[in-house]
Length: 414
Image (cartoon, rainbow, N blue to C red; front, side, top):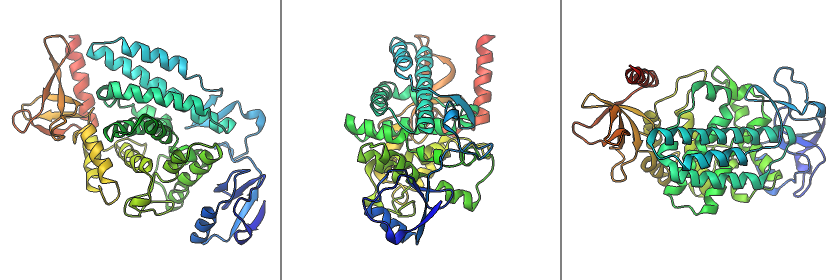
């Protein structure tokens, strides 16, 4: 490992080996060119020296030993060892999509949509695994897959937003689950903001890959069962830059690159890695910033319970125009309602329901599906909440919601 003075680096210069800030943090991948912007950032960070190293950046968490080429068939992603192969996605996803389109009743449609959702989760897992083992992406397949996902979300918005992966799924596949849920929210917001189809695709691809830089860090940092130390948080804060370097080397479109680099920037300049302010943050990054934060707040981790989606929404609303873009927050609110789709709620009439759709005229009074009651056609009964007897009194916490669903299932069986 050799030391290089930053003052000797020149724009367009490249190296056969990786440049590192220190033994843990990769600055540039092998063959990646130095840019004037990067040199400026190094000066801003007061970094005067970097390291040149050709060792493999992927290490096994159990041994901290470099992964040799002969071991590339096995890789640890989210704590689970996988046998790797090129993504198979399209056949399984297209079959699941076809089944979903042929289902009309409410329960059948929900199950079919969940099946499609799980197939996309599998695909995203394969994208991350492929990069970790082969160092590349099938970009054409990824964009085609996201195109299908955009159509699927547009046609099934009120069903797909009700899906909440289990704690076990989120724990074992945190990056994948986070990427999937964030991408669903991002596409929903993009549709509300009337993005064109190419923009929706780029936004979706950027959101799926926004955590790809985490693969350059030890996996315990995103699988931890404890709160992070200051040093650990500092390491995690490098993942947008690491992700940008990965996507830049893979020659993704510039808007996708920027969305990954800037997704932790904040409107007031309090974000990272560049402390950008409102007008300097890309539109896609503003959306991913919102959905990434909202998804993280409303998801359980090993070291804490999830907030309710209502609490997460309120927190986002408190920070609109300070941390988050106001237009994006408004689009999130009107897409999910203040009591977000999927939330279980207690009504003033004593009934329990699940929010199943928004009220386009009033995000405070969404459409609710009453648990245990059916309409004339046999589907669950839905009502529009109001400020009277059908008013939402509060949101059920996760334990209350589970108990209510279990009780009603027992009632149906008996």
